[in-house]
Image (cartoon, rainbow, N blue to C red; front, side):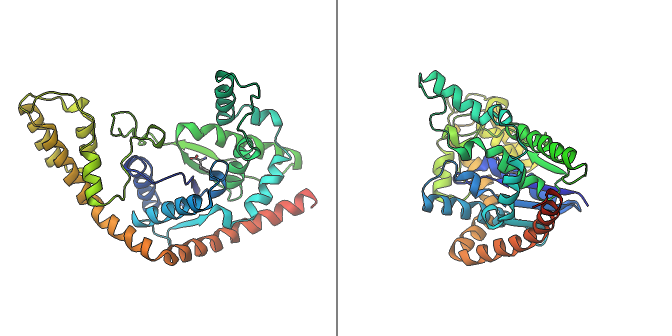
Amino acid sequence: MKTVLTGIKPTGKPHIGNYLGAIMPALKQANSSDTRTLLFIADYHSLTSMHKAEELKAATFEVAATWLACGLDPDKVIIYRQSDIPEIFELSWILSCFTPKGFMNRAHAYKARVQENQEAGKSDLDFGVNMGLYLYPVLMSADILLFDTDTVPVGEDQVQHVEFARDIAQKINHNYKKELLKLPKASIQDSVKTIPGLDGRKMSKSYGNTIPIFETEKKLRKLIMKIVTDSLPPEAPKDPSTSTIFHLYKEFASEKEIAELKALYEKGIGWGEAKQHLFEAVNKEITPLREKYNELCENPQQVEDILQEGAKKARLIAKDKISLLRQTLGL
Ligand code: TRP
C-alpha cells in the first residue's frame, strides 16, 4: 500500500484559501483511495518562529480541530502532532549526520532570509536565523522518511524540501548498501488553485487578506463585504472573469447558481448584492462545519484524544524504522 504524508505548519487561523486549496482536496483523496494517509501538525516546525507558548498551542489546536471539523475521519487518516513522535528527532539527528552543510545553505527559506539581510544592509547575513530554521529541511526530511512515504502532496514552495529528503535518503542507502529509507516523491497538485483574497491577490496570511474559515456568521459577512471591487455603478454590466467575488462564488455555488449570478453580472448588479450572494453560498457550506468546529472547541479533550490515538498508531510504524536504523548504523 502506498503511503501519502502531509504536514501542516500551524501558523494562524486556517482560511478559505487553505480550505479550498488544501483541506478539501486532501480529504477527498484520503477518502477515495486505499492509501495509508498520514497527516500531522508540524508544531516543531512552527517553533522555529513562534516563541509564545499560548500562541503555538492555540494554533496547533486550531489546525487539528479544523481538519476534523472539515470531515477528516481518524479511522482513515492517521492524524498526530509532530512533537508527540520523539522518533522524528532521533531520525532528524541521524539524517543531519549525512547531510552536507552546503545543502542547507542552498535551502530556499534560508537563502531568502540571507537575501533580506543583505538588502537591509545588515552586516550579519545570518541575522535572525536560528538553527531550527537552518535545519528545517532536515526535520522535514525526517517527518517524511520515518514513515516510508511514497508521496508528499505539497505546494511549489515545498518541493525542494522533498528533494532534500530524497538526496539524504540516497546518501544513507548508498553508504549502508541497503534500501533503508524509501525515496519519496513530491506531488504538486494541479488542483491547488489560487484562491483570491480580499484584495484580489492570492489569499495568504502574509498578505493579511484572508477570510478565516470559522469566523462567526456576522464576521464572515463583514469580511466578505470588504472584498475590494472597482467603482462601477450598480446598473453597469460587469465582467465575472475579473471579479474576486465571482471567482470565490464559483467555489461554493452550484452550476445553476453560478449561471444565475453570471447573468446578473451581465445585466448589471450592485457589488453589495453580489457580495450578499457570495456570503450566502459560503455560509451555507460552512455552517455545519462551523458547528462541528465550535463543538470541538468546547471539548478540546476530544481533539486531544484523537491526536493521542493517532500518535500511538504513528509510533508503531516509527519505532520499527528506528530500530532497523539503529541496528544497521551500529548504534
Ligand atoms: N514545511 C511544510 C510547510 O511549511 C510543513 C511540513 C513540515 C511538511 N513537515 C512536512 C509538509 C512533511 C510535508 C511533509 O508547509
